[in-house]
Image 1 (cartoon, rainbow, N blue to C red):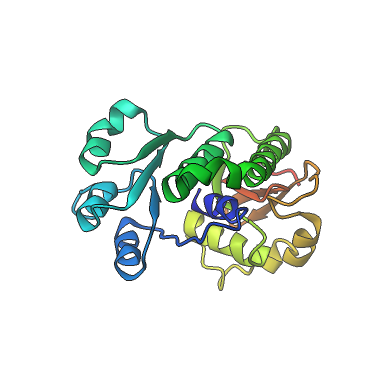
Image 2 (cartoon, rainbow, N blue to C red; image 1 turned 90 degrees about the vertical axis):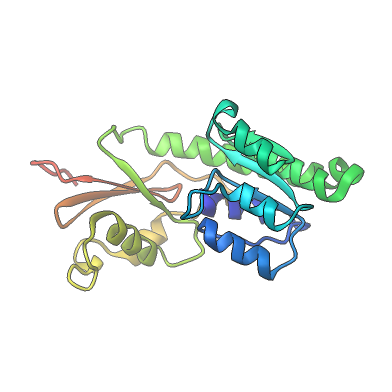
Length: 233
């Protein structure tokens, strides 16, 4: 989700982006960089304190957008304590557009709508295209499959696949080389990165690795499941 958000925000030239993978790292970023607006999921620190509350305690002026899949009733207390500026619930591609609009309004004020019109249109179109392609590419993946990673085209596909496999299956790549299961270079040439200005065919590639079966779609989504008794390639 962080990678997709990062790719989305970078569609806008006016946005200078800093990211953090954990609540603790987020506070470190805020301590070392001037920030106009914080966009955060419902993260908590190791001591159980919600990140947005810790952000407000650290900076009583910064704007905060709470971007979470949780219902308002679940986060209302935290949002009130942190005096968040806006709340956006994750439900679909248009929600990214809402977040970007809120950020621009909070930072740029009255000129927000004018400065974002073309950028938001491009973002909405790219995300809708990705959602459509993802649906087409994963029609044959039943509930046994688990989403374990995503390739955005910024790194070599083979590296992303190995990292996803190691994280999900606990299989050290040095003991189970990826090339013994699939040609990563050929796979990257076949698949296309997400969020490009071109159509992507609904491609899905499956391959075995250890006791697991993996699938990668042309939208960059990486899935895994326990290998069935009879494996089809």
